[in-house]
Image 1 (tube, one colour):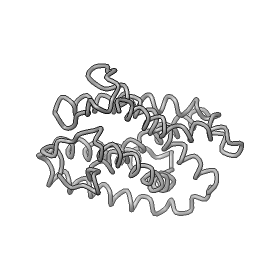
Image 2 (cartoon, one colour; image 1 turned 135 degrees about the horizontal axis):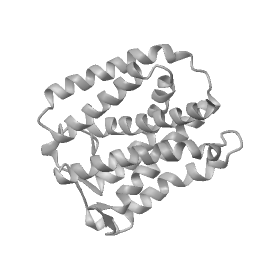
Image 3 (cartoon, rainbow, N blue to C red; image 1 turned 135 degrees about the vertical axis):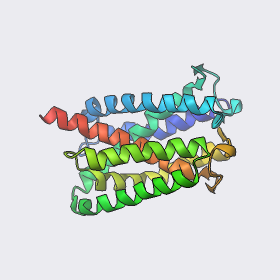
Image 4 (cartoon, rainbow, N blue to C red; image 1 turned 180 degrees about the horizontal axis):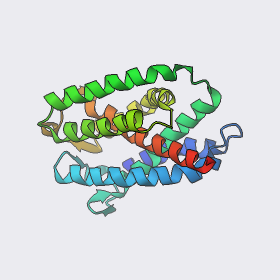
Amino acid sequence: MNYTYLLINIAVIFFPLVLSFDKKVHFFSKWKFIVPAILITGIVFLIWDLLFVKLNVWSFNPDYITGISLWGLPLEEMLFFLTVPYACVFIYECLNVYFPKNGLQRYSLALSNLFLGLCIAILFFGYRYWYTVINFGFLFVVLAYVEYINTKLRFMYRFYRAYLVALIPFYIVNGFLTAIPVVIYNNKENLSFRVGTIPFEDHFYLMSLLLMNIYLYEWFKNRAIK
């Protein structure tokens, strides 16, 4: 039982790692772009995670972790910010290779504006909850930057497509983490609305995590071309 979270991490990355050597996607050749993207994003989210532990937003069930920790965070939680982004960016790149058309990009700004409006609304009504405020506040900043300050990289349609597909493994993995539970949420710090056992905010936590990773991934690729 103490290896539950560790095994979930291994399961998340196993197939994307093995399939990285697929001849068509050739994802391993893009590791030089994905590794710095994951590391930079991971540092940001680890700081966020440490803050949430201090604020009692969530905690970790000792029955399902190995007990190895750093700065109060379980080893498995740190691995989460490597395995999940890798798997999600792999999904993103596979979709780009097998479905290269980007014709719906013109609709992505409208969808982003919808999410920006949702962030504002939830920040207004959920300002009392730490997880809600930090989660939607961060998403608002990153999304606004990508759409309105970043003017060169246009990938948001492809991002939304990958996010939609990534929700499938998200419900499986996060379903396990929250149902067992491995991660215990303090409902006094969130909206107390769940999809099954998964907090509503987690869907947008995934969006922020994936968006920052993909933006940096595209940024490093674009820089290499120049």
